[in-house]
Every structure is written in structure tokens, then in C-alpha cells.
Length: 317
Picture 1 (cartoon, rainbow, N blue to C red):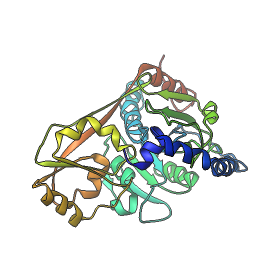
Picture 2 (cartoon, helix red, strand yellow):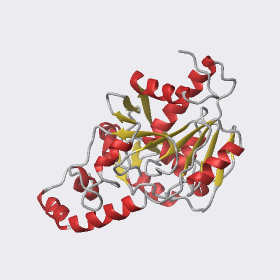
Picture 3 (cartoon, rainbow, N blue to C red):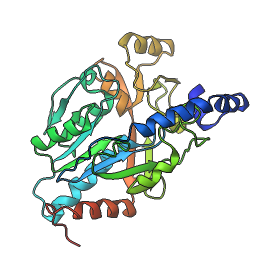
């Protein structure tokens, strides 16, 4: 674990002391975080909007969850008589080198570069079950654009705190929980933990969803990762000759990867799809770590019941 992973999830004695020293800042952070959820005009839309979020910092599975929901709905809804499920993802596009609203994907066409979209948005763009991907700091404008383009179901990535948008709030609870139930910087929470009661459904790992990851061993590969909680890949460390971890959303340079491969006399990168979309055009051989998520019946039922509440969806049963 790096310093921040151990600080938030498995602190040593000195890190625990630091946690308590920083508590006044956590109270200030929590105050402004709560304030940011207030005083915005409520907006509602006539299509199902499912928000996938979490209270703590990243790495809880929002991206694979959104993809799994899209795949499930794309398979389920046509069985209920819906001719075409046009599922859109709307997200902020964290760490992208652009601003404003950008349509990343429409139908089967990818319309911009990964630098403009951000790595997570581009990962969504490669998922066949997702009809459209839009990045926008303003989620309402993103939703409106998706509707203009024909969306009949919208998934919001990381929008739990947007309480002014009427939506189905799906809150993820990972198996790996922060050590302290404090807001940043003394804990990993972006809102106080008691905000979980505002969720429509709390999806608990290993109860409502199960995560899998697999990759074949390749001792001519180095494992690289710029994801939140890279220690989740621990079981795969021994499958590569060496492992390197970078800051979440790291912008890789071809030269730095070439130097790492040369250092270990390797010719292959072992990496997740989130990192793959950033290096796919650099000409490297790669071994993909597949991260998959299975929805349990409890979660599927909650999603179906929500969609049933819309007149546009005449679902059986």
C-alpha cells in the first residue's frame, strides 16, 4: 500500500495521530461538503435516471457497476417489449484535458480522444451495451443533451451528492472500508457516513454484487496501474515480473513505459482496461486484467422496480 492507502484503510500509529490532529479540518470540510448539497433548484426528468455513487474515495467499483447495469438492462428490457434501449452514461470526466460538455460516444462511433474524454469515459465508450457517453461538469446539461440524442435510460457515474436531481441513488459499499468514519482529510469520506440513509438502495459487496478479476500469468510483463486502491490487484502481482503503481488517472508517457520494460527485460504491459484506453495507441503488447462485476437478484429487482415506476416502460411481472 502507498501512504494514502495505508493512511485511510490500514493506518499505523503515527498515521492515527495525524488523523486526530487533522480533525478540525475534517469538520470544516464536512461543513462545506454538506453546504454544497443545499440550495439548488430541484429538477426531474421523464426517463429513469440511475446514479451509481459512493460516500468514500474511489475504487468502490462505480465503473464496472455502471457497465454491468447497462449490460443487464440491455438484455432484460428487450424481453419486456422495449424495441431499443438507448442507455447513456453521463459523468464529469475527471482529469480530462477539456472543459464543458462533450459527446464521447454516440451509437457505435467514438467522437473524441481519451485526452478530451478522460479515461473512465473512454472505457465506457468501448462497452457495446452503452449507446452514448457524455462528459459534463454540469450533470443537468449532460442529462438534457442525452435526452436530445434519444436516451431512454440514463446512468450517472459518481453523482450521489447531486440531490437536486430526481434519480434512483444506488450507493456502493465496498468490502474494504475506511478505518475511520471521518470526512477528508482525517478519513476517506467525502460526505458524513450518515448520508447513506439518503440512498434508495445500498449495494453491499458480496451480498448485492460480486467483483471478479483475472489475467493469465506472463513473466515477460510488468503490471502497471493508475487506479484507486491498486492493492485490489494484489492477487495478480505475482503474475508479472514487476509492478508499478501511479497516481489515479495518471497520464502515461510512452518513454516512461519503454524505460520500465527495458529495465526488467520485458515486452508486455499487464494493465486494466482503464489504463489500456490511455496507452492503446502506443504500440505496446499488453495483457488485459479483466475486472467484472455480477449483479445479484436483490439489486436487479430494485432496478426493475424503479424502472417500472415510469409509464414509458410497461414491464411484465
